[in-house]
Length: 120
Image (cartoon, rainbow, N blue to C red; front, side, top):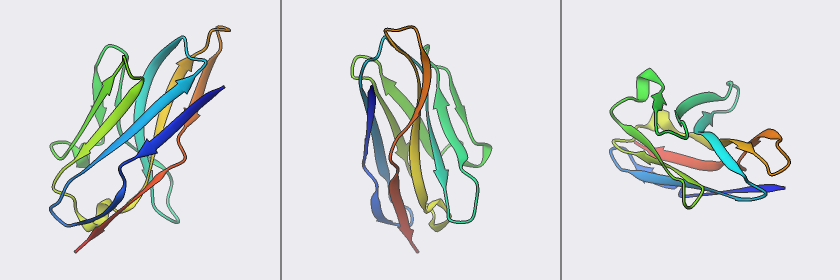
């Protein structure tokens, strides 16, 4: 069993910053990729950014330069630093982790989601 706990969402004015965190715990042998997705009502969930176990990152083209993903392997935590936020960044943000368990099972988990609202 693996648990993901997200934090850091909230309300911010346009141009402001937020930092999201997602901590994984439980039966974890190794965490492979970690990432952040976002979803607005009526739309599909979309990739924001991802980071491999080796630290390689990938971003949605429209977010490059404003968002930064990072991870702390010792804490099994992934972060998303969001700067220069815009009203269109408003969404529910979900973390996603790809985990190898002690039973040699590769399982993908989603966080519960955290709301980010940006006021104009």
